[in-house]
Figure 1 (cartoon, rainbow, N blue to C red):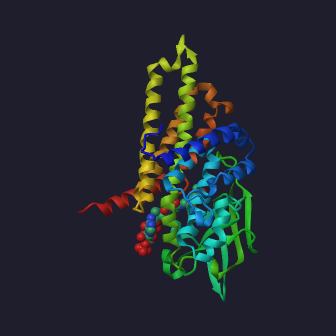
Figure 2 (tube, helix red, strand yellow):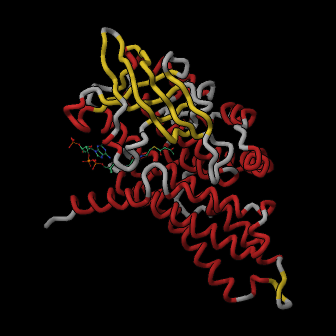
Figure 3 (cartoon, rainbow, N blue to C red):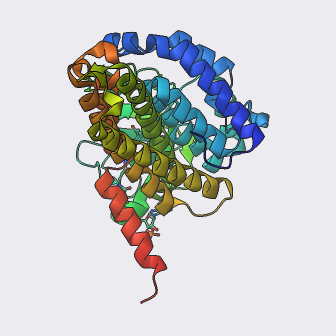
Length: 384
Ligand code: CAA
């Protein structure tokens, strides 16, 4: 299913990632789900292929691919493993892009080559126990003392935390200024006073780690400030605009996987003396699943194309994330239904896909928040 007008280069990259995902990751998908272990060997191979630095310029050790190619890679990796899909999406969109977009030359030189090669994994620390959807309500404090900042506070639900070496952390530098008092920092894993909590046990995405972080008088160099003091909230929002296209692509990989498995299964499975695929009731469901997947495809690559062109894409990114993740939940649920009893058994994959799909409606902004972003932008664009 490749309806979007991809260039030959984009198609070649997509094909390479797809082959890697099917040959190397797919055979391990059930094992990853059951053990919840981070597949260091696969991630090393992804690094070797350049996948961990796809959209990072060559001068910083990346591949220099465009955003569309990067989004295709997330989709193809997620087709095989949504856990590795989110690892890649968070590492790049909100773990590496902060430095590429907002970093100083020194920060770029120090961190991008290590992130792009996969030697280091990146993470993004915004959410707190009392600040999820209301991201502007964070309380983690950063107080400047001489040539250091001292961080105190707690972050939760941090993807990649168990493996990450570098965290983009948001903290309040001026509590009198509300969202304009938030700043962004680059915090290395071995910073004294910074601890990573135990790995959460999740419904799905096994193999991708999620942990809480604690900052207890963590001293970081003043040079670790990203951008200017007070720019943190805007930085987070801008990063999430791109990040949400990545999550949409992750959801799309999950949905396509469920659709392909189901389209094969219903041709195989005989009931009432013929394959399920010949029953119109089954065809209705399949047609709806395929239509959702096709429509999500266009929303995702339209948003990615805008981003490649340097145009505003916040509304389109939210639309893609909303539609693709709701689609993934619906398609995977129908996939389980069409598989009948087998759909509830792990060996048939679709129950895992259904569990993995759920969080795509929640993270990088719940789908309710996506609607807020879409409506606000729509109202701004519409003349009274
Ligand atoms: N780009 C640039 N600037 C932006 C922006 C954007 N997309 N969106 C907002 N801003 C700016 C505004 O212009 C405004 O600037 P001024 O102060 O100069 O006027 C400022 O930011 C505040 O904006 P709002 O008043 O719109 O802020 P708000 O409090 O109403 O919040 C929100 C907006 C959309 C609800 C936001 O809080 C939000 O996105 N919440 C969801 C948080 C989220 O997505 N968390 C994800 C965590 S990361 C994750 O999930 C990763 C993972 O594990 C997979």
